[in-house]
Length: 355
Image (cartoon, rainbow, N blue to C red; front, side, top):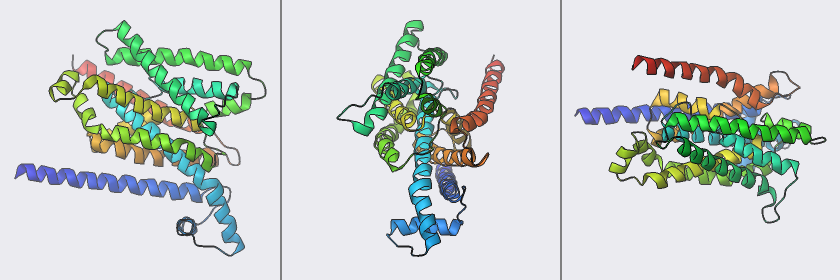
């Protein structure tokens, strides 16, 4: 009887969780699409989006102008911010779960820096692979993100055979700084493309059209599906590799699959929006605190909340000092850095309390 009651309580909790996060997502999207230099009433925004979905025409001049603003400018920008936010949030959730540390995220582990090196090099050298076309940038970003992750793991293993979490994180920070020097070198050598590269490094979804959604969407779908399919294995790995092996998990294989999928999502996100830090740190940590550590629910909840969060962050970045636009990375850093400090302080207090 008690088991049935517990199960019902859990079901009610996750129904509430999905209800709250989905409502937050849609409210964030509609608000971000409605507000801007030209404000469009929320009801009209809903009607325009619905009209586009069901191929309804709008005849009056104002309605047609608002439709163009939403469909051609704001909606692709907002959806791109959502895809980037969701990608970074789920990547952070799996890295934190896999490494059993709330401080782990793509930015701290050096994956974002690796993806940034690939993207900046592509922009600087104007690289275009014929068979890939528009996908050259995300593919090279993903490749360098994967290489960075494997190099970090290799050196962490050389330094510490036990591969303790602290060693992996410190190795990631070292490589992040090392790769940052390459980016600084490219910036120093850049002349006419300096503004483009600097704007990209600070993180932005400004002036991105539907093409960019086409670039990130395949990688988002592939990476997300892989991680969702491994959510049960992630739950087992949280209790340690020995326990996971006892439960029948092929630990090494699953770790590689999860790290590769997380790097794919990070690389694709960095390719279309630049380096946006702290989303992968703050959102999964908040979701874990609110709704629990079960990755079967933590991962989708992180995606939805991360998407809504970055939509709102982009809205703030383009309205707070309008008509100028702040890079999204600046806003996320202002929010994320204090949260990171609080998590670190709480973790250290917990460690001292356990002694």
